[in-house]
Image 1 (spheres, rainbow, N blue to C red):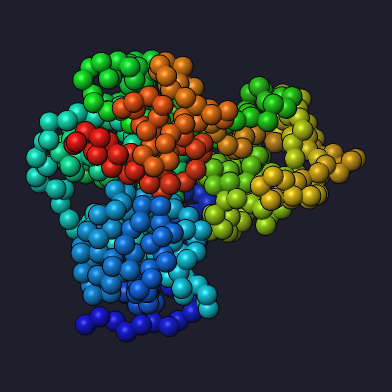
Image 2 (cartoon, rainbow, N blue to C red):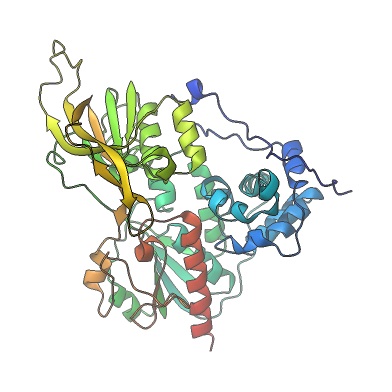
Length: 473
């Protein structure tokens, strides 16, 4: 019998590791709902006829339908509902910003907290992965061949949707492991890598071929892929080119982009003893930026042994773009937020082995200015303005720049007739995802610049639909 509606105004809390414990390990912070918790939270859903939550989801998961199945105790049925729209439910349940998407439109949020849609999606996906087997039958081949560049969320989604329709899909990944930003960018304590591998294995079971160590634009070009018989190419190569502030001292040893820092830790296992790709550990760390990547870098540095970690952000807490949950976790773990603070120079000033130095072993100084918020900028956010005479120095061992990334220009520079915008993003048709080059589609961060996992998945889904319509005429 289905549960009665639970009119409790607040979400069922998510169990987490204690802050003091989790700050020194890489195990997942959020522990997930028990079956009892999931059923109780599912009962908070009103099953609205208008379904506003669905319109807030970039891939349009039928949220009331999967929650209804969950309430009935049909966990596999709930998973199958999600799977109709989303290729990566275990991932989305962990890293999607539900609070600004589906949950932001939940009716229960008008007089309390919205239904914990992301937490329920995670529960259903984890239950499926623990109990279900990989699909045993591959779809019937339809005779068409498609190449997908990049194995991040947009590429995996595009590949999965096409494979289900019988397309012979080959995914080309530049790194030695499939998963894109899901494996090199998001830390283990937020997204365990076995979950990503499970999703990749699901695609392989559908017949998708994965070719790693293939840098498209260098190993092969898009033009060569088309010449080899691929009838369409989807570019989901992400935004892996880090941005810097262009201030003095950014070339000093011990200054990293967040992209490099997280890749060395997540993918190259720099946290292990005597790693092949070492990384700065311990000491004091300053992370410049206020997004989710900045939170990931700061919390990773803490787990690598830093005695002190600062988040340096030029606006206030109200403008901080990171997810509220990640900010709360970072603060609980002891990370110090230096808000309304802007770096102006990085100073490298003494030998780290000289422990007599008054700075207690710190090898760099991050020179900063205090800021105040002025008039709104073109996006409506109040512009930070420097306070004259407010300069000060943070003594640190490591500085991590987490101020965004841009699409890598390699594919553009090696593909004929591919239009890009002034930010380096590939220009596509909004209705189809097709680029200025016929038969070549693109989506995700390669188009928009750094954005969310679920928006990249939505772009991969759109491109798969368009490719299918073009090739099945």
